[in-house]
Length: 215
Image 1: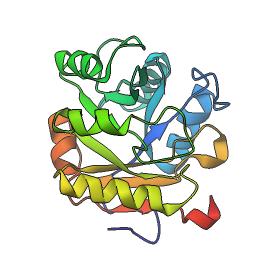
Image 2: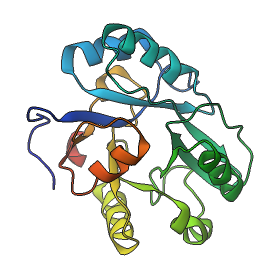
Image 3: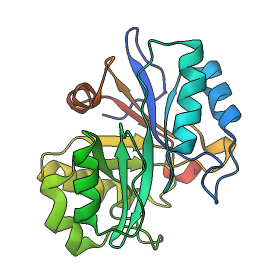
């Protein structure tokens, strides 16, 4: 369900599940800015830079330096030969240029979660190939159902319908590449300690997303 405001009840974690630091060549958001945004808002970022876990490693080193009880989530938006796939709770970087299936093998080998970002966005060249998506959907853990960078709501609506059809939980993320975009889409989940907890807690989790006409 979509909440009118991004406010979490007690004992709930607010997550922006798609954020880029300046370890991504097309992002202007520094690691320090992401950490300061977390300090001000309490919103935990899933930092998934293009083909790199360096940004998420640095962000979580700083966050956990302030609060060691927070679970580290190393993540990467990996450009496969078939389009982009996010790995979350990684232990090491996955190289770009593999097939989607090979990338999912690498994610699984690390006990991490796979997320397919913006699967029905038509204005990005990196969106996963639709035929390949159908082939690998049984291996995908999470479908990104809310991406605040999508230019119209139709892509998100189609993503959520697809997730429902395949009984996959949905994530929400700003896909922020600039400071003002942070927290453009959020999900509120119960506290979690690892990938299995987060996957379970995403089911029916409340979501807030900035309306398309404000993006």
